[in-house]
Length: 212
Image (cartoon, rainbow, N blue to C red; front, side, top):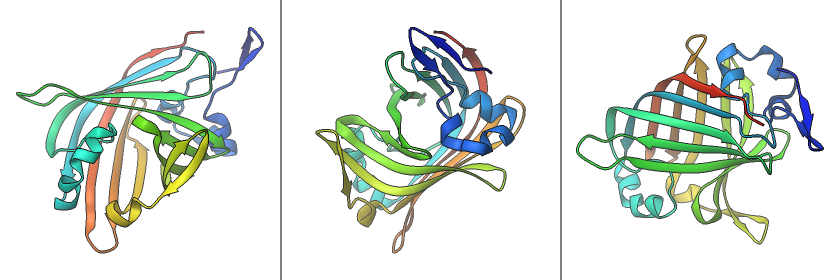
C-alpha cells in the first residue's frame, strides 16, 4: 500500500515506522491488522472468541480495572469478541474498541488508544491517562509486545507508576494463523503470585476500510 498525501498530511502507515525494516517481512494478516494510515479514517474490524482467566489478585483489583476501563476484569471461556480498530483524522493515534459479549449480561466495552512515542516505543492509554508502555517487536515469527511498565500521563508528561509491584509485568504476542486470521495472547505475571491475568483468543478480519 503506497503512502499518499492529502491536505499537507503524509498518509503514512503508522506501524511502518514502528516495525522499521521488519515491516516488509510481516505476514499478510499482520500488514492488514496494522494497515492504518496516520491522519485518516482507516478502519479494521476483527471477530473471534476469547478465554479470560483472572487470579485472586486480579479479582481484588478488578474495581480498579473497571474504573480505568482496563482489560476485561472477569473470567470467561470461549466468549464472542469484536474489535474495531481505527486511525484518527487529526493524529497518528491508533484506537481500539473491544466488545465482549457475555451470556446473560450487558456487553463489556474496553476502549484504548495507542500512541507512538518514538520508533517502536508505544504507550496504550486507557481512561484517565493510565497507560501501558511497551516495545513492539517482530521476533521468531510473532509480533511481540515487550513491557516497559505502566505510566500515567500528567500535563503531557509520562510518569512511571509502580503497578508492576502489585500486578506484575505484562507480555503480549500475536501470531498469524492464516491469510486473514491471527491468534493473540496476553498475560500479567508477578514474580511471587505467578500468572495474575491471562487473555487469549483467535480472530479473523471481517471488515477493512481505507478512508481519508
